[in-house]
Length: 484
Image 1 (cartoon, rainbow, N blue to C red):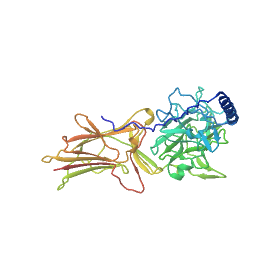
Image 2 (image 1 turned 180 degrees about the vertical axis):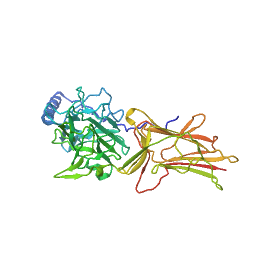
Image 3 (image 1 turned 90 degrees about the horizontal axis):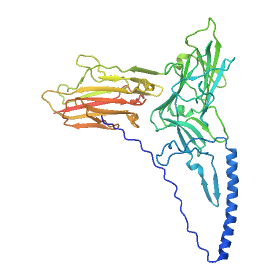
Image 4 (image 1 turned 45 degrees about the horizontal axis):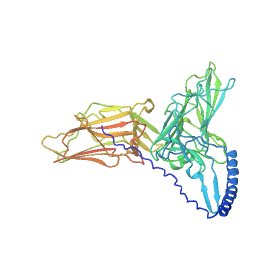
């Protein structure tokens, strides 16, 4: 199979070119002595304030970063043997010229992950724990039980940035407007105790709401019974739970957990407070619905059902039926379509049964009205499995020859950056041709009458992604066959 994905190219950073001036030759000894003396005094006058200025900046810097600068060879992250450096800024002025070293201080970092839950346990004799994340220093208030640093459970195309030129640190999409997500996973199990209440506060998420650009939510179960994190408020969940997930999903290139740098040495980018109670014979041991509240200056109780996300998902099933494409009476073409909004096809099988993919593995159909989209994606992206969908077609029609075959897919933008492939393949030889992401694949006078279309997903991306916008239907797949 041929892949349609070219590698993503980053712009190269031009090195700073320094010019040299030829040192003039003195005409006699006295002029030489005068020039040397003048040069020494000038250098002393210029370098002295610079040295004191540098030492003053270094002494007052509270937010030294251990990020690595952007590589001049790849345009992205430097090699592993790159040297960490202090990103404290210095401005040197001479006459009317200012040299500002902050111009290059846009620093990006890949976020590491861990394949285990973060265990939250109170100190001995206590029924309370507070867990925080500091985006400025990229540190957590706790380590894992084995002493290793805490990290998110899953990260896909989200990076941390320290931008000293604009005086801010934040998380954002690695590839602008390409669906990205990440989540932290916590274990709240505590022997002899049950969770009484969880309070979650995440400042710096205003851009998500203002731009309708994504979702920040928490879930007692993985992607089930989730609650949106309110802006500038805390969310209180009063119910028994053993696990907790904090999830960030981004549809647009906005800044999340955004924090100003100057004058701040640390910050609580998000905060989780867990309260336990001692278990008794009457205490519940299973998860039961409880009350939900958002808190700012006062507490307003909201019923749990109002926080249920407006999202539905259906696992795609398969059936080994080949889809027959034949023209209707009096027509010289046949058109087949798939609608991702309703998850339906334009025709049925010859026996009247609904059309299904010939193969469907680890994929599901989703309608998410929080993000205003419908799409197909991998059902279990964290298990290192791929997603696969095949549709098989037969357009033989006795007495007629095919003039043209057109295949068009919509909502496939996220398949770039090696997220997956979309191919049309010959039924017998398995020779494949990539279907363009924007546009259509047209084959004039095809020398075959069977083919299959295959979608492979290597990452947790959305395919056939379509905005709802009160639309009732969409042509996510369009296959048209013309006969003569």
